[in-house]
Image (cartoon, rainbow, N blue to C red; front, side, top):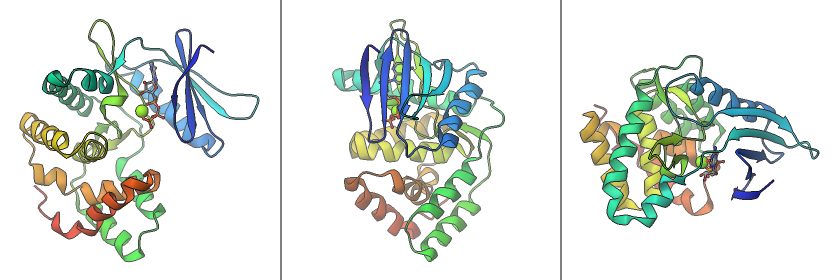
Length: 252
Ligand SMILES: Nc1ncnc2c1ncn2[C@@H]1O[C@H](COP(=O)(O)OP(=O)(O)OP(=O)(O)O)[C@@H](O)[C@H]1O
Ligand SMILES: [Mg+2]
């Protein structure tokens, strides 16, 4: 293997020639790893640019591996941080691509609503809070759009031709695209700062003719869904959104 290109709490990403190998720690279940691979295979059948899935296997330690085609280029995150002056240009392309994802037809993925219900139930929130959040989720309009689930600049690789590849389909599902936008907004709030998050939301809503309050009404739900994988410093922020759930009332 050539080199490690990413170390996460519970997985390591290596480059091996023209392949990328994602090695999952033992706490990942077989089903979780195969779900990521299956999502990738399904999305490969669309006309979105994504790396090809090459194989799934286990190593000598019994850890699960997924091999993907290596995409030569830079993540949009690194391009944004290197060229702050071009942030708005990159953001515009990012939003256009997210809207393209939402307008792409794909069959047989998990349902976002099931996933969100499951994640809310897995939290340590009080039963009454979980119930309220699930009621709120139930009241949301039911759609069937392709949602990446973690659409953020670190999951986009821009190659030398300026083509944007979307990676990391582990959280993909079909459902209401506004929930997907709320996830991205939260990610921006946490990793890129409030100013950039606000610009993202404003630009997305302008371009897609969506009401900002409608996206925000998803925030308590997606904040709860993110709670279990949140880093320590994120929990307080997510809890403040969940606790303010009754102020996110306006839906459309
Ligand atoms: N096919 C690929 N080609 C090139 N680089 C890749 C590829 N897949 C992953 N990477 C690099 O590895 C990083 C992490 O990969 P990926 O996003 O799939 O893992 P992850 O587990 O989702 O990590 P995170 O939770 O931080 O998003 C990417 O941001 C990218 O820099
Ligand atoms: Mg990623």
